[in-house]
Figure (tube, helix red, strand yellow):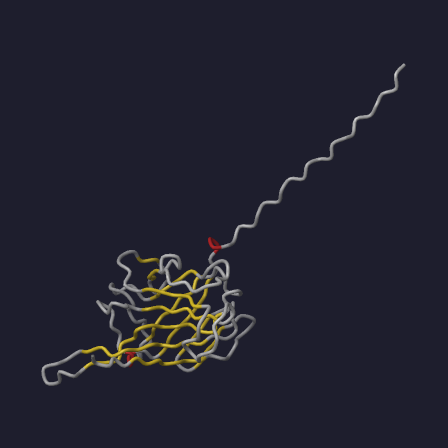
Length: 218
């Protein structure tokens, strides 16, 4: 059995702008208002692409993008989006159709106590570059990890130090992005009003019942 190399490219951001968290770092750009500091790990694996004169030719394809050190308590219920940008400052296609430039999940409204690997539960979807939803076959998958070790630095995962991983095309059927073409990753969160946790309605307090009083007999 041949060995398939699997690499991670890691990017850090540490500059907070204003009272939100617009962060810039080597190869990454984030607009995460719910967390002051996150990290990005880009997983790569070898993809064979033989040519006539070189049957061993190929490249490292982007297998996954992981947002690490994310505080799911502070970011509960928000939508999390990732994009990949090439050397010409153009968004890289992440799906089977050219318009799919963004991958989005909805973070749990209540901080999870166990890992989530159900892409449907996370409402994983493609968006256009302007944020419009795209229907069609979803090749990607996603996972939220709150236990185990961080992909970025091996630290212990928790609700306040979680990994959210976007797997671009696990089956490698259509989306094989050359890792060398990725010059920048972007991550952003936006509010998700539909994910707000409903508060129980206050129960009505019964009015006190007046005690009967005896009328004096004449």
